Amino acid sequence: MKTIGIIGGSGLYAIDGLSNVEKVSVDTPWGKPSGEFTVGELSGVRLAFLPRHGKGHTLSPSDINYRANIYAMKELGAEWIVSVSAVGSMKEEIEPGHVVVPTQFYDHTKTRASTFFGDGIAAHVSMADPVCPELSRVLAETAKGEGATVHTGATYICMEGPQFSSRAESEIYRKWGVDIIGMTNMPEAKLAREAEICYATLALSTDYDCWHDAHGDVTVDDIIATVNRNVELARRVVASVVTAISETRDCICSRSLENAIITNPDAITPEVRERLGIIIKRYV
Image 1: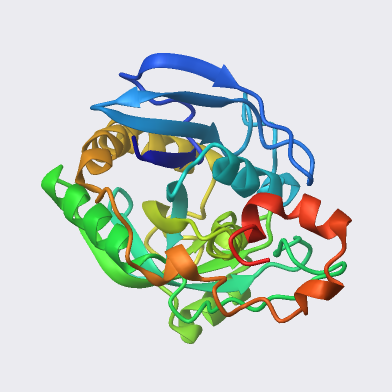
Image 2: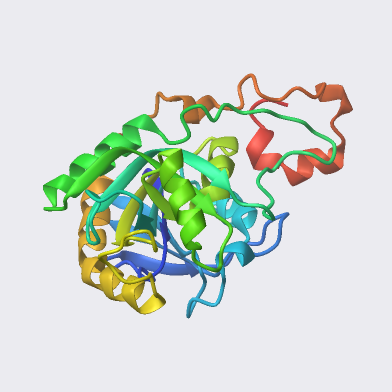
């Protein structure tokens, strides 16, 4: 049975309709994930669901243990991750309530650990195309089938936060040509690539950041109100996409470490091998 990981963002803290449900705690070499995983079956597919911000939304974007979250997904057998995320729109045509499935990321964070490697082992994975093309395609098609207005081919800029943008920042990001802005998909996408997990984002547009003269500045109330209106849509998309995802993988994600580890295997210590066990065991 294939296992699909679902990471829930602001407003999506549970998945309905699961059977054979169990709560699973996972310890990792990088500490504890955001919380317990809810593992169960949906339409014959095994799902591992994790609320990114923890129970009760206690974790700010920069406080999330991204390495532990992705490592735990790998340990639970997830080969695909669908990240559900609230984002701000940087383009007029991406209205609040629309769905975006980005194909590119710009990492504008400053303080986050963004790799499993280092400290005795070096690896350099390709991030030229940072999301799984097949998973993104299926996710976009599924969202359209559920009645969403969907934008594809978009660039997501990930800022550090937790504050929202200043007007100057917002205008500069728009000049850079980005389409949406958020605080959580980096380093998630980088770590998923290192872990050889297919990754794609279902981004829910909630606001126009602070650049749009005809709309008020973004507030938490605005975000939650829009997300709450779309949470049922997100749940329907997740329920439909799990059966649309192929049983097999033939993409760069599934073999991203194949030629990426540059460290001589003889130089990799037992401690490093143990720490990175499920990540590197195919290659060293």
